[in-house]
Length: 343
Image (cartoon, rainbow, N blue to C red; front, side):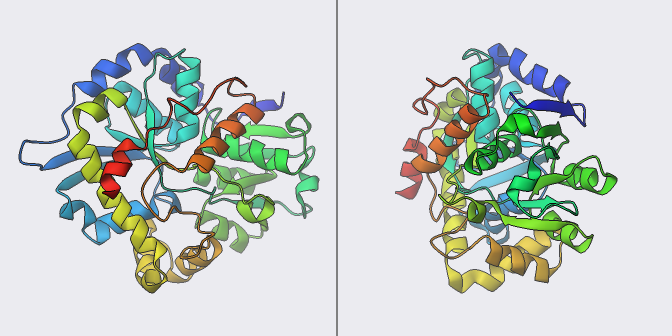
């Protein structure tokens, strides 16, 4: 097994996540997301405002949520694990992060009930930023590699990349360092030698002298199918609020189709720049580097579960020793809500 060092205090959050599973069903199912008139109130939780929610920013900017009678309150957390915890406690209706969702299910022995109903990001949108002296994946051996938390997507993605590169995770030091901004701070302080960073912070790292080994799906020969930003819900809440969830997914679906259309390139770039408070030039580079508008896009072109990408998450968890080998994706994903949204 790989060696794990704590750079930030995340153990308490993880412990809480996996010990309150018995409360999840009643807490979430008691919340109502809408009214008989179809005016739906949704509490959505995710990490910091980065590229991962690009389709959410599009849905907000273009009025797609409003078109479908959905009013969204956004609650930010530092990591997807934190978002999962809010779903478990019933403080949010919808979140993102299939890897921590599966971990919550496994470690609670089924006490936590969560479900992936759509995969919006189907390739990990990370760039591997490294300190001076590292010029290839092989150079990561013996180095400190920052990830977000035990169960978060960054950890699973990092293990997946190491496996694809033929590097034993036991030959590196996995350092739990928090979200993208915290991991960048770890690089600057010298606590980390390398970390997978999200746009636009990876470009800031380059401006500050850190090299980039490249975009993770480009570094992996198989294209790295991975449901990085799944739409996660409590199944009891979802069934009780099916109309609200379908309306929400319709808006996200409209946004994904908007992103997939190359004709919307300039608008998509503007939206990301404004939402993440970054320069237009950086947002433009992000659009191009993530292959947006092509068949290699990091984002799904329609709303729904992407079987290969969902399976990629489970395989990554198993490779990292974070899920049993006999676990299957069946029962963890449900495309029926998105299928209704697709019409």
